[in-house]
Image 1 (cartoon, rainbow, N blue to C red):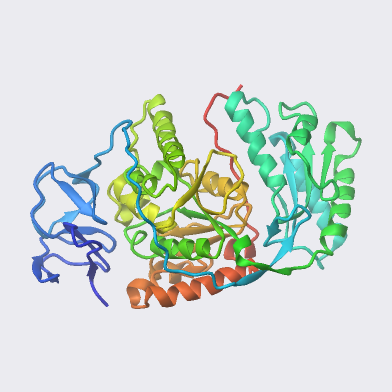
Image 2 (spheres, rainbow, N blue to C red):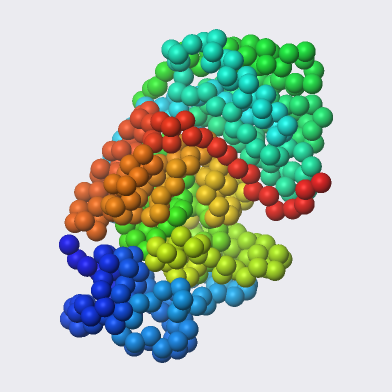
Length: 496
């Protein structure tokens, strides 16, 4: 196995695949490099002398500049590289021609066809509170319901998706809460939903019901707890009605073009842009070629690589929407007195990511090279098949919730450090390195680290496609096996 990788011919750094020691002599494309200090796995070392202020090049793009002279063979990391990012930028559309290698294979999966034509990959019963005040009641209803129906459960899961909002919010925050809750209630992975209200909250149940639009009243039911004597008893009655219907649902064969997948990374490391994120990019292009849909989000983690996405926008209108997507988030940072380059996290840095540009150039590889077909604001639902961009922050649970709310039936989540969480849709963890996969087999579902262990991308891609179809068919990912589900809503404003 190679000890390092040079990602792009124009790079002036290479990435260590294993821990490298001071004094090691490496031949990098015919150039001898002697390391002048230890370099941890996932971290970078210089291939030439880099002057103070000179750009450090990785992936063929600048990831920042040297804070001091970096001699050839130096360890290049967050202490000696500084971001080039600052404030808002002017952008020019320079369209990139896109050619995809994949063709439509006419593949299928077995999903649940809903009355409105949407397709779910799970058949679950959900309680969705309109306000955080009734979170405990939701838990009590599910506990009693499970006690009464016994262990022979005929749906995939029974969950309450608790949150802290629905009251004491103003303006855009209140509207965002309504949108995310609406999107969850209408999600096709649910065979039945109880909307659980208090009665006096800002998110008034009658207004929220109208906000849902035309919905299946046999599958979505409301309970206002202030209006009944025993809210747990009433809640259990409603769940039994929903359960009686959902338990009869069966999977049917549907084309892979019905699959909608969110692309997310978290706890990234220096291998993210080499293994797991490129694997997701290859899969994203494959799914788009099948007529399916993928969504890339984490807008602050696009900073430094945003022009790559802008130039893949299919129209000038989409380019303008992407510029707004980026600058809106930069304004958000600047309005709070925070720099736009305040990233990566301590775990990212320890894993080998030095600057936000370093992170962004790896992050954006998750969406492959397809044309951008649409740009969604936070809380919007999918309208267009193909690659979409979605406005949401980098926070793992907030972004994953936003992807599910947009209509994704599952989220593909790459990680180099590991994380156990799961959102309200199946959240598949893909490790960037084999040691993590071996250490945290109870968290990680698929190992992209095999790419640096010698497996080809073509072979791993086929294994990955097969696994994703199995999950769409009902195979549980680890967080589902451990009954770990959660959701989170983005908050930008004041709380009353």
